[in-house]
Amino acid sequence: AVLLGLAAGVAAPLLTRRFWPDAPRVRNPRAAARLFVVFMYDVIVANFEVARLVLGPVSRLRSDFVDVPLEIDDPFVATLLGSIVSLTPGTVTTHIDMEARILRVHALDVADPQALVETIVTRYQRPLKETFGC
Image (tube, rainbow, N blue to C red; front, side, top):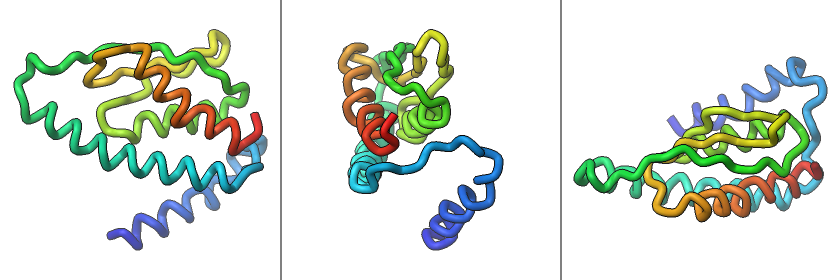
């Protein structure tokens, strides 16, 4: 299953590349590798957090919508950011507004909205900017 997932993950971008003629190029592969490691770590940790929340009392859930200011100019990279957020258990991107420069995120547990914003900005958005130079 892992090999099939890896093969699909490599093949999909190659097969759909022509649909993204203006896709930015990776300018800093090291930043991309660091982002990947951080993202994978966050996915694993978030799986346990979400399991704990879902299996516990419903009263413990503090779901909310949070607006994350976009520091990214490129729509493709903003979409990558939205995808990263959505792939991390417990959060989902609901809207990307390039004009207002906002990424709207719904989170299952929001104790401190500003802390969630800062986490998304520092762990994902800034590394994406560094990776793609945008």
